[in-house]
Image (cartoon, rainbow, N blue to C red; front, side, top):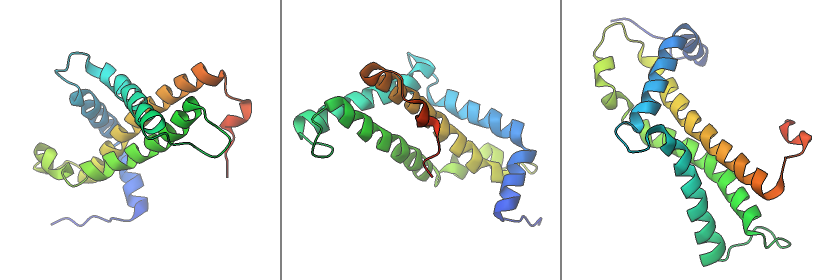
Length: 158
């Protein structure tokens, strides 16, 4: 039986060696999630949009939650809430799908030459795609409420 190193350096090196395969599997996972639905890949855009609307309504209208003392703006509250939800949904998708990763890809696991260590990279890539689509929805909502963000928004906070 062949031994594999599970060091972080080897995991990143494996991603580098199998980049094309990882990219193809990630694309297959993203497209396969919406296969057979009426709007197809557009659901990846509408899902965060609907989530933003529902969470904004529930927390700012029904529960009347406020963010800080000085602001009663529902739009500002929605932006702050949705920014947190983008990060939470990224981690939640990775954690929720990780236990079934091997079982959902059993055809690949049975192959002798398939590099199993790229399956987590495929999962992270898929979650990252959905997080980036959610970020685009957030940016569109920000543009509608406040206009262009300041140039310093791209600067690293650390």
